[in-house]
Length: 275
Length: 304
Image (tube, rainbow over all chains, first blue to last red):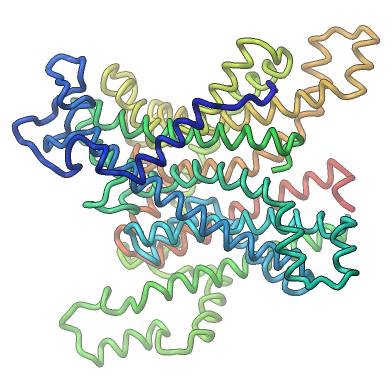
């Protein structure tokens, strides 16, 4: 393994994507759903027929691909971010409770964790979509339900190993309340591994959302996400490659960058690779 | 060994039971299926009869136990759409999915294991760097996109392989490459890590001192030691392959579980969704249990 350098490029791309997600339409040259039947299927700039006005080309309705991608960034990143934050919080709390209290509570929570992890994640997500339905809110909920269990398992095992350390035992002897010990002494010691899992999870969440949207079971029009743009461009794959190549590249770029940052963090904080 | 076996099997059974409860709750969340199935001109008496016939008028715990009892007898309900037992439909689809996953697994091993071995033997080299690059791409490219790109390249631009369908050997190529590429990334990384560890171990250093040829050490002794975790991982990998298969099957119109379950969701065919999810979970859990037990037989340290 090479020594961990700071992955500046990957960090820059991640920041750029987050900024694009937050600003959204401000950066886009056109409104994402603005059809222009005078400029249908314009190829990207640099190709025959391409113009500077539409750098990445236009789709079958003359909508600007760059603007659509930026609009897609917003939903793809926000759903992934929201899912990771909420799933992480729920999982961390349940893991803390399970690890700290032990006994029957621990057994109950961990069997629930096992049940949620017993299914390949996309199948679990599909089962949840079948029950809850599609759309932005439901997809975030689905991603939270498919993701929380890994945090609970991780935090529980961290708590079990930290619980036996001297400073925690001393705090206990000194009469500090269990909740205070858990929040002030145990949690800070587990935070790096939680952070690593969360960063790696962003990539996983982006792939899950785009897969569901591609299958027609995720984000629904008029909302836009990278997977949905890809699905809509699929029909014209043979004559206009840019409709499927750009959104795919956006997904790959985002996932590679978040994974790279996550991997480097992991190598830095956890050289043995226990995660 | 005995107590390990009982504990592991016991845990698995509890997990399965919880999973059925989860699926049951999810199915109830979708609401009363009556208006969905009965024609709009049905009378209230008809609807009441329907509810009674399917046990929907009973209390929820009662319904759950009926559901559980039916599953134990192999009754997974009747598909709303096909009017056939869901079990039969799932069993029909599972063959193509297993064929595709199995072949993809072979593709993934054939690509991933040599890459991992090579990178472990010469870690500071352009080869190792490209393996790392390959692996991060493989993990980041969604399988539906890889599938579409392969179709553009090798079915449309160069018409070598069919872009969809099932039945001939040529149909297998593009789906198996899609899924195999996806799985080969993590197999390469895992082989790399385990081979590195095995090459560093005392017994390999010892063999080097003894002057045993390097090729023999790497391919025979180190690889044998690195193989155990890799084999275990293949079980987990199977779950990943099933996940990838759902989407890949959809792109290539492959008549497997993935295609079946997505169609069932789009048609709101809940009994079929339930059957697909439960049976796949059962398969997945059984494979993992078998690998855990096998691992315990091979490695005595686990049994404690």
